[in-house]
Length: 586
Image (cartoon, rainbow, N blue to C red; front, side, top):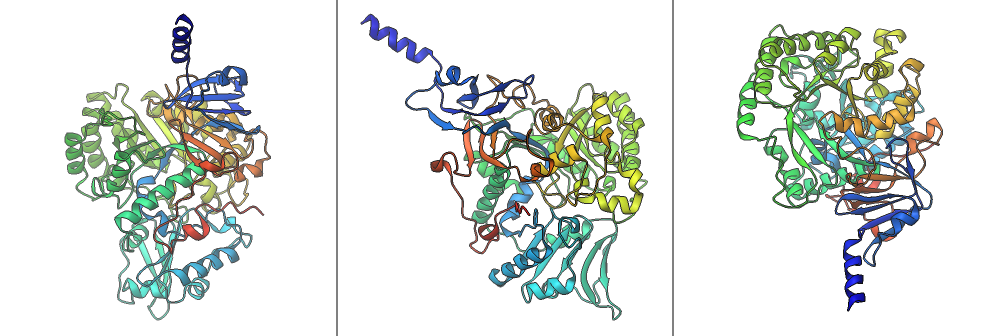
């Protein structure tokens, strides 16, 4: 009896792992510690260390995976991505992200046009530019029309311009009499007929307003689409995202899909999100409603263990008059003289109600004016530790960095310059680009900085482009922008995409490093990030991704039974034929 009781007590008192991954090289990012194995229980890291220590936590019920010597890193945290909006449309979009040949891109376009049914469109929406192609040029309207024929097509190139084929112009009833909207241009030929080129001058409204007119998927297809988008994020090791809202993403109507996935515990990324006012002139009314109806301090999971999903605050655009569009093909926009008063009303409301906020700010001139407003409000309603930060900040000055530091603000940077570096150089010169943005100086000053992508309509969502940009100073077209004084080592770059992104919103106490008691969010990579050549950073992806202790992505190479591919709906979706991001190694 004594022996039986002793054995039972020993069994139940000794930690028992749900999942163990061993024979790995684990970059814990915890004081440079490297481990061999990791054990997970109930969403937390139970044990991390050498093989013998970790394997003591196994039982007959433990799932054990041999990493075969591959490396593990903490899960990546994209601090600026548009998942909620992007997920609703992911299955409709043909992605040119990562394609190295314009010839191949046009062939993909032709194939997709042939399989797209009547009433639907072919769409290529962001994440690509001319310099990624061997041909180093953009497609022509003639090539696009030849590839797509009678199937309507819309191709978005960054937030600079978009292409409509002839069938698209007809479907949207754009003709010689159609006027150009304010801040945009419908290009017309010598006879006054639209060519199919839509140009942001520099206001991108013409681009995303046109995109918003295209047909949407039904509810079940949107659920499937969002799952597929999250799975492609998991494919690159992303486990957390701060959703930055976005144009034509109305709250709460356009949040229904992720609401449902949260309730059914089917989100595969942690997803705090910000609310973005949509209608110019009614922003204060919108935020007044949300402040009263949404309790951001309450993250209710209905008593269940669910992946995080909640309103984090307001932004990234708080008022339409403060939108300084990042179209480097055009001159910098001058913001409205009414901006300060409109922004002050909204910011004062948020600060008084202790709502965190983020502000889209590309240009230093805009940042100066935004900081003037924040400093004025701070005199009457002190920030006093309230979480806030700027997004983007490509051309920020030393003076404004110092002002942000004094106000205890942060900066969320993105790798937009990996896609727009050449355009910036053409307009402002090679010297101006060398500290655009001044990432290294931000870190030297001790400002909180997080890393993100701004996918999907400008940049791609592939985080390894960001790692490549940070550590080489190059664009996806291989143009060298930065000198050593603005290039980061690989460890610092990874910290920006993990713990420091979490720190922007004070979530760094239990994530961003791999440590006992921390969240079990990590990625097992196909190659060792710290060992591969610079160009091979662009080929990195996850072999296995774990969120909250559960395997949410597997390519099947280590544990075939965990591999699961969700067929995209509808059946003609380009995702079924090409997937998402194209890892197209030369």
